Length: 275
Image (cartoon, rainbow, N blue to C red; front, side, top):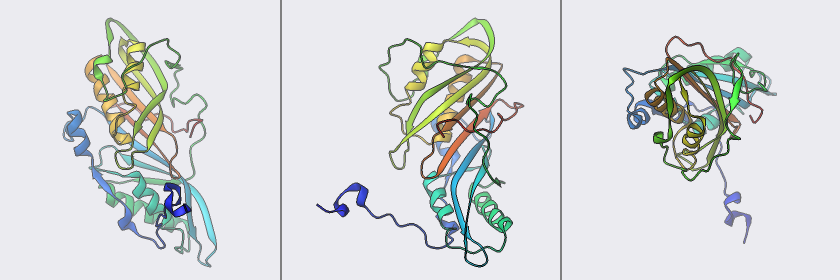
C-alpha cells in the first residue's frame, strides 16, 4: 500500500492564481425555510464574523507577505459563503502580486460583497482572546457540569426546552459542548455558544440536552445559530435574546455567527481560548 492509497495521501488541488470564482455562495433562504423563517420577516439581526489566520500574497517585488483578517458578513445578506470555498479563495492570493496592502483588502471586500449580495467588512488583524469567552459585560454561567443523563444526539430537539413563566430573569448562559457536522464535508464543527436573554428563566438541564441534540446534525454554522435563536425565541418567549457561537478553527478559518433581537448591540468581538 502506498501513501496514494490512503485517505491522508489524496492530493488536493489548491489554486495557483487569484480566482474569485472559487467563492461558493449559498442562499440563506434555503436553510431558513427548514427552520420556518422568512428573509422578509426575520426575528433577529446579526453578523457572521470570520477570522482568517492564513492569508498571504506577494508584494510588488515578488516577496511573500502574510497577515490575518477579520471578515464580517451581515446576516441580512441573501447569501452565506461556504467555508471551504472561502479557504480556497483566500489561498488563491498566495502567488498574486499587489503593490499595496490596501489593494488586497479592497479586492477581498469587493469579491466577498459580490458573493454575499451585501456589503462585507474586512480588516487586517484579529480581535483579542476573550478568556471568559462570552463577549459580554455580564458573567456567563457554564451549564456544562450539570449532572444530567443524555441520550439524544439528533436531530435538534426543541422539545427539550423548558422555561419558568413565573420567574423573569436576565442572565447569560454558555456551553462548550455544541457540536454539529458540516453538510458538505461531513467533518465535525465544534463551538462554544453563549446565550444572553431577559425573560422566563430557562431550565438549564433542559437547555443542555437541547444543545447536545445537535451533535449528529448536519447543518451550516450560521443555520445552527439561527435554529437555536428561533427555538429559544418560540419556546422561551424572552423579552430579548442574543445567541453567539464561536466555532473552532478549521482550514485556517473560524466563524462566529451572532443573532440578536432587533436593537441589540453586537457582542464585543473576541476569540475563544479554543480558537
